[in-house]
Length: 184
Image (tube, rainbow, N blue to C red; front, side):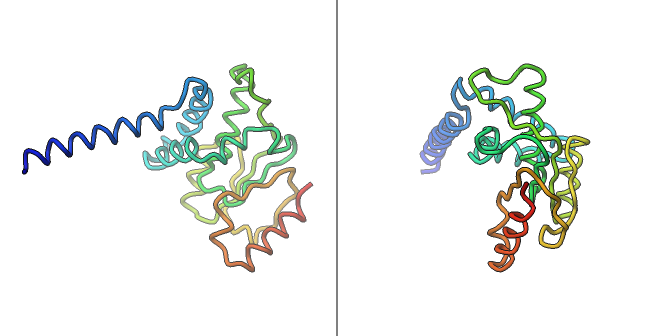
């Protein structure tokens, strides 16, 4: 029974590993996005291996990040404000997209990456805001504070990824109203 369970466990582990590899590897057509994600995630290596792993997994597997690269989703120009930016994943991805465009490495079949004059993030957690600042350097401003009480500046686009469900309903509605009032 012990020897049999070792063989069955090894076989199940191999099948699970092959499935994970196939899922995460992606297709050849997905290589440019995977490279962009790698560069954005690598910004977090100096903070911690956990921050890097989180960035790599979240950027690659959550489709909302790929959608931010479309000019149809985010209007370019002006200021982009990421409310509840966390460790700055979206800001890092947009910064890397801008750099790829400047280097001439942007895929020919993709729409131009959204470009903003200024990237700003708001984050309540001090430690997480520090990770964002470290990863983004001077490419984005990260404000430490609660978006419900911080005076929001006018912006061309505002993002709320994984934020609203963490707030009470009344705060959700007032935050959305405050954001709508500050959109250009």
